[in-house]
Amino acid sequence: MIECMARARLVALVAPASLAAVLAVAQVNTNESSAHREFLNRLVAAAIERTHHSVRYVPAYVKIPYPGGDVPADTGVCTDEVIRAYRAVGVDLQKEVHEDMQRNFSAYPFRWRWLSWRPDANIDHRRVPNLMVFFSRKGEKLAITSRAEDYTPGDLVTWDLAGNLPHIGIVVDQRSASGRYMIVHNIGQGPRMEDVLFNWKIAGHYRYFGPPARR
Image (tube, one colour):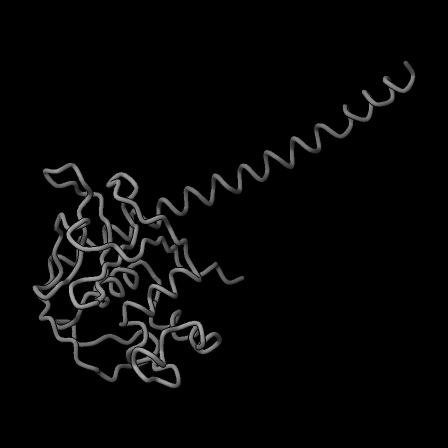
């Protein structure tokens, strides 16, 4: 009996502290989830805004400033629309990809694909396979499924087109007549919002909220 009473007193003393810790963690998770939702909302808005721009599909190598560099505003490829949408919400993929490649160059498909032997801030972030590695390393790598509901606004999707040609787009919050969320992408006719999620073989599915806040 005495042992049971002592145990009850211990539980009474410990439980409030444990509950406070649980509540604190829950509050942090709630705040983080709220911040992530807000970030994705802004990213989606930025992606949709890109569809109002006239962009010629020009895949040429271009020397650009670093950081914050961009090819001429009226030109670009599929990756440039993703880069521009992220830059509109304060994330410079040129800088983030380049810094990760400097530290972890062997993780990227440099030798077999482009015969590149060192990072190149002019082009590395503009290559879909590099973005796939980067988003896998620094973001969330999500399941590839045939269920449209698994792809939500703010998600990044990559595809393998005919001839092993990679492509990338951003899922946005506008639905097509099919009920699926549409994709903002540039496949040769400038940035457009279209129902193309399952038009090609999906090769990657990611979510990226930008780099951790630097303190």
